Image (cartoon, rainbow, N blue to C red):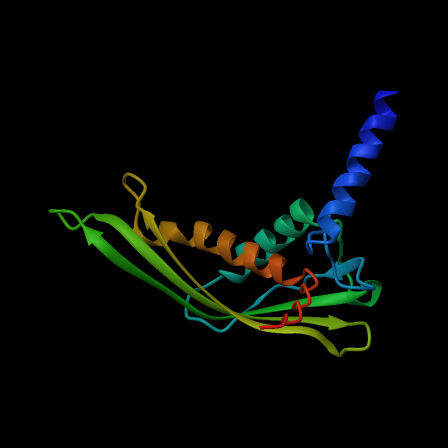
Length: 171
């Protein structure tokens, strides 16, 4: 009896929210169930940042979507290409003895999702800035992992199918 009540409640909630434009579950792109994520391209002077960025993107895909990450582009429905073109770190607040108290990172990345036929399903540019308090005894470079996590979150948000705009009503 409880199972029927629960199912009825879920169906009612889905029917109500469907009229408002809400969806239950991951609104992925049509036909994309598997994705290959090659190592991000790094065009910045910041060395080896592409490896933790790629790892963060894969973790975020696995955590937030039903997509299956595959190792080979040939085995994937789509290939996610990420190019990091800007990575700047700045000290915002210094202490009396020049220790970093707060720093910021500004990152710019180009994101492309290519279908099996090589045509782009998505092309976007992401700019992310983040301010972080320094870890005790840390340096300005300690903002990198947190900033990369934010970029990874934004990349995965882009993988969702865009919600169609509602037509304008009468004025």
